[in-house]
Length: 73
Image (cartoon, rainbow, N blue to C red):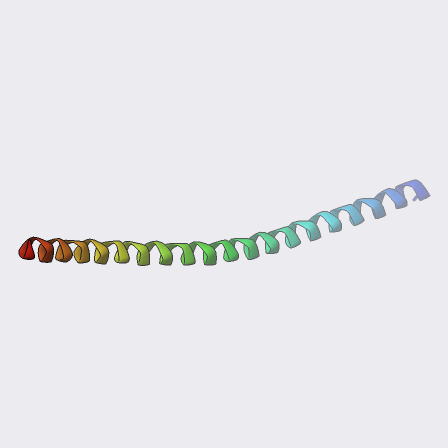
């Protein structure tokens, strides 16, 4: 086997290993980033839910205040 063919095969194997390694690392990084994004979305959803509850409580409180003001006026 000639030196050129040997070098070409070594280069091919090295490139394949690098590509496969890059895919594995990229996949792990993507999964990590998705997990972090899911955590942020969960926090956001929690804030939205709490805000909705507070808005409903404020509506009730405002109606009660209006009723009290009308009763005294």
